[in-house]
Image 1 (spheres, rainbow, N blue to C red):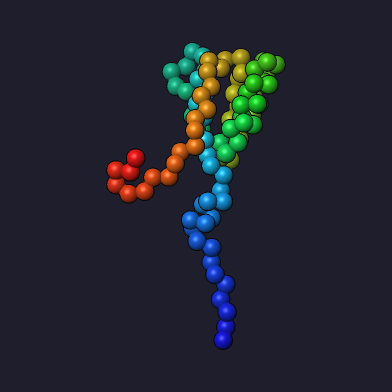
Image 2: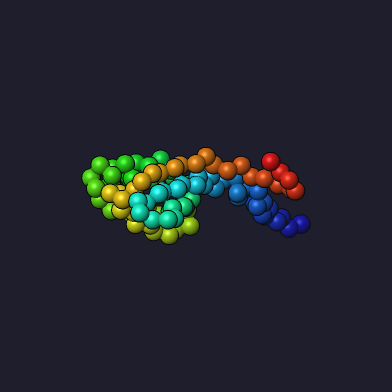
Length: 93
């Protein structure tokens, strides 16, 4: 009798991934805002706060691995959202 290893289910793998939080950064004198997701919103907030007090350019890596360079002297506002809950089915609310 052979034994088979049980594959981990997709739901188990998804439950182990950190939740992504949407972050919006408004830049002065621009029509659009910078919107990205991060699994470490506290680190993003700390980096922007430290950079703002120093007047430096801050480098942030989003949840997908893209690097964002943000000039903190031009930041108008920062909005850190709440983690989104998974919705399943039609009309899920």
